[in-house]
Image (tube, rainbow over all chains, first blue to last red; front, top):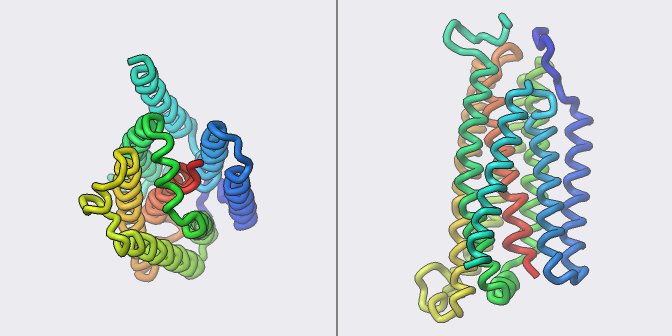
Length: 94
Length: 203
């Protein structure tokens, strides 16, 4: 066995992560029927971001990877968000 | 670390880093499209709502479930190879590929229905719609189409992994190919996690 310092996700962990993801999906579909108007999208996006975070942390193993990968992933996400924000600032104030 | 080196030229950590860098470019590829969607949606909120009503939320939800389960099976296949179970890993990847095919079949029915109604980019029916709806359906076809292309590529990659598992090229010691293919597959799932609410559940 040569995992040396390598974390192996158990089958159980993977199963639990799936259950959580499925619950969040159900929540998303449910939330749509709540008629929150403009906030429905915000809520759906929030849940989607959370789901995405869980996929990256556990399925893509980021939680157990070396720090460099985590820093890179977070930096890229922040960079993308800043691009979106800047674009919207432009459009909304034209 | 000695055992992360496959040979004098390959190193697992670097190999994984390379894959992640590629995944970041994919994130920006779809991110750009999501940005177009976001701006167009702000401009044509009502038309986007009308357009979304035409989509089948049930198939969309089903596809979401299919991809989430496939993400789990491919993650489990890594557990299998790491615990010296190449045949289990093979079986789990086989299931993942089957789920990918189910996803594509659903897509086929979805798109087929739209095309039957003569609703596709460039058609007269599409051209007669209000501008916002044209934008919505244009984005729908481009984004789900590009995503489906990635599903196909991911499935092919996973099939290659299966061949490598069978031939013994992937083992408990050397499974970088499987790991990277799994990462690509998770990305495909990740993109769909965002596509689904934005296209199908717009209210």
